[in-house]
Amino acid sequence: MTTALEPAWLRHARTLIGTREAAGAANSPTIMGWAKKLGMKVLGMVYNADSVPWCGLFVATCLAQDGVPAAPIAVRAKAWATWGANLAAAKLAPGAVLVFERAGGGHVGFYVGEDQACYHVLGGNQGDRVSIMRLEKSRCVARRWPLGRAVVGKPSFMKAIAGVPLSRDEA
Image (cartoon, rainbow, N blue to C red; front, side, top):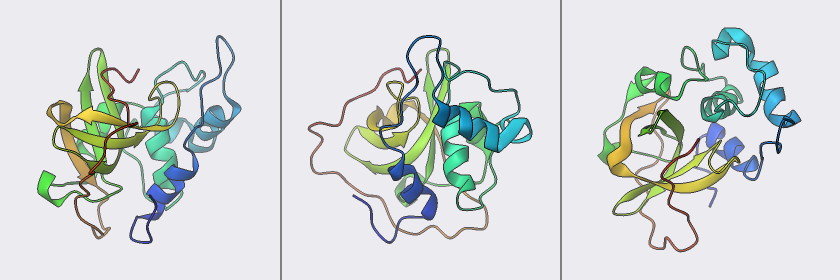
């Protein structure tokens, strides 16, 4: 559910729900367009295939729509763990950047809510697409907010979780 209180970067992220990787050796022109627009200076590498994890690319793309600078080496999920300002779990608000541990690396996405055990995360490269999934709170290693931007909103507790899949590996 979109609200006027959500930051512009999260409203933009919601418009991208459903964007998918291309199957096989092909590449999504949308995802590759994000990489081209941000460039090597922001991403920290030449990004040449949507088979390369793109959760950090997605977050950087959405934040750029609101003029918010990306983390150094934005394509790396764990680079976001030191970006911006730390945000306590009790102070989360929709649009906060959450960083998670996963086998073989990390994952990054936007907080949209939570239930008792999981954060509800709008992110890229979740099932090879932009989606909202539940990720266990115990896997979260950082909660961040852009420097110089006021935190608008508060934690959003979801009453229903039916239909929101639980993710265990976002790659």
